[in-house]
Amino acid sequence: MEYFMDYNTNREQLVLPEYGRHVQKMIEAVKGIEDKEQRNKQITAVVNVMALLNPSLKEFPDYKRKLWDHVYMIAGYDLDVDSPYPAPEKPAAVDGPNPIPINKTQIKATCYGRNIENMIDLVAGIEDETVKNTMIRNLARYMRQQYLIWNKDSVADITILKDMQMLSQGRLEVPMDMELGPVQGEFSKPRAYEAAKQPQQFGKKNRKKKHKPNQQNG
Image (cartoon, rainbow, N blue to C red; front, side, top):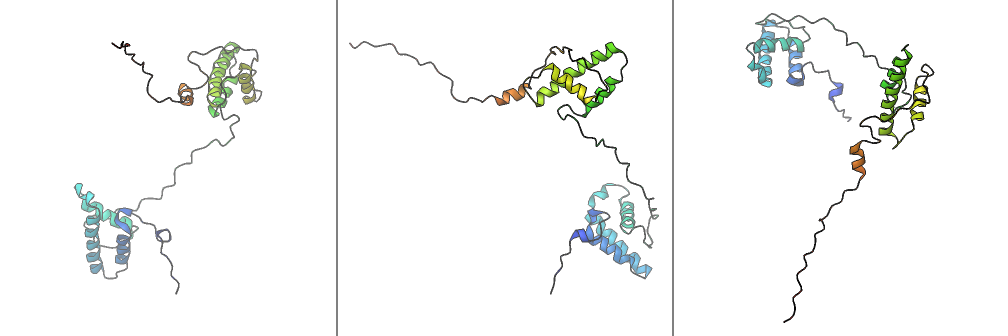
């Protein structure tokens, strides 16, 4: 004899999981009763069971109406019974949300990130040369900070400028002799990173030994 496991993944999806699968099966069974009077009695009993399974609804003044609305929802709005409340209308089908566009183009230099590439594109579109050079210098300083965080302890300015030229794909003419200069508060690695590399020393502090005065033997 072969036995087959009945997994929830193979069963019909629950409409309202808070009531469980047994309530959903009971409602489906009530839908199959031909006698409407008997159907009314059975569905009332199911509503009473649902009230026990979801007692938090009793905090609402119209909780009984909510229970009957849930009955219709679980029944797929296909239930012919005499409800004490008007039957809710089946909601119209709603399409899913519009997918969010994702830029799937590969990042050319992960240490800088995609935002740097976008800023380079903006700088390349500036016509005023004075403003453009100022933006190039400020952006290069920021790129240097990002480079130092993820790569080396020091980097030459020419390396940053060449990277900017590469990322612009020729759209931005970067002066290779530009001096970036120091940035206030700039450091090669985050202070927390450098502190973590230093081994912690544990132990008692050196205590000065107290020397007792020499006592002469009398």
